[in-house]
Image (cartoon, rainbow, N blue to C red; front, top):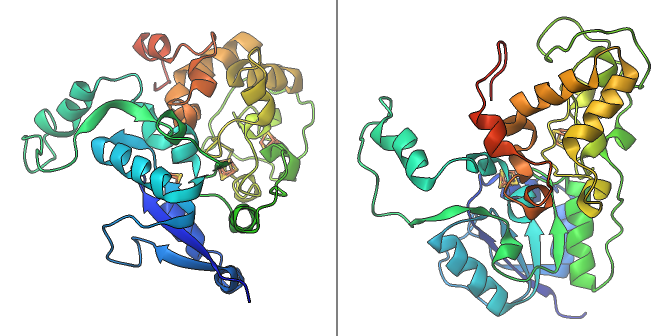
Length: 312
Ligand code: SF4
Ligand code: SF4
Ligand code: SF4
């Protein structure tokens, strides 16, 4: 029997949900463990030092000095690096701090926050960098697996492709491809949120006046949310056309599709997406994929006075 591939895991700034995603492999984990040896996995082992490995899995984003050091050490010691989850691929949900300076964040979390025990900013933790960044802003990445966390089916395939040295057999579809709701034309004239009124479980949210970002989101989740009545908020990051084509942006793509399906004017939908931009762009707004688009004006949108009924 050939030697098992050595796999080393490190977490940067994230929530540990991706480590749980690995555990969610369930019985497939046994199949994985036939081929790999986990030589470093901080969620299971009390391990501080970095070790040589065939595959390095990094979860979380580059937010602190420690993240930067850890990413460099992993790159130095691992033959291949897997960016595991939306955090290392695009920055992840804490990218929503993008419109704010570090000082504003510390002020909101500590100095001016009546609910924290102390107003002192802690000094015995790794220093925050100027902003949140994806992993490839610091080191070279061999394979990207977005998802918050990725679905076990994609985790298995990504891991096996790296261990066996072959291309991953992972689809390039959007979330809509897996969603069973039907896009139909309706006479809906007003926008509404998912918690406002009844929704037909078989009809697309867009047709019913509710924003859903499944058409501009890469499927690394098998579309669980729309099955249980929740519109897609794009935690898997942008779809391939949005990534590859500079003229395609999430805001105008969704607004155009929704205006075709309903009687709601496109400009109204665009304005609503801008009002909710911190939600709908949150997972990838730290990434150049969004920030380099000339239409991405988050700082301006969040500085505008919030229109009635909206939250920025
Ligand atoms: S990608 Fe999502 S689940 Fe994974 S660490 Fe980041 S926030 Fe947590
Ligand atoms: S836009 Fe949302 S609800 Fe409509 S088909 Fe796509 S994922 Fe389903
Ligand atoms: S929000 Fe969208 S991308 Fe995220 S798990 Fe739900 S359906 Fe998938």
